[in-house]
Length: 81
Image: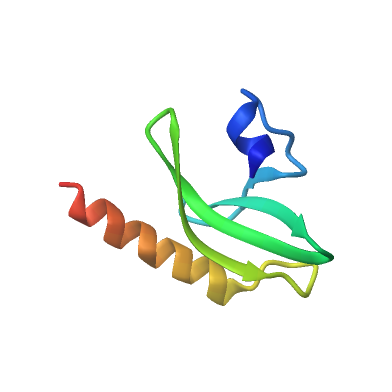
């Protein structure tokens, strides 16, 4: 997380847009041997809203986790109007 906070351009190995999603981005982190994924979306040009996290056990991001992040994005943006 410190890497994402402190540099202007984060390498794709740590922060990337997931294809075939409604604008969901993934941050990759490791902590004590655990691989953690944080999902969220861009809100304007400066903010990333993180709305879901899970331990990743497979190579592919589970569709259920992506759908949950998309649902939370819709709910969040609906309250901003």
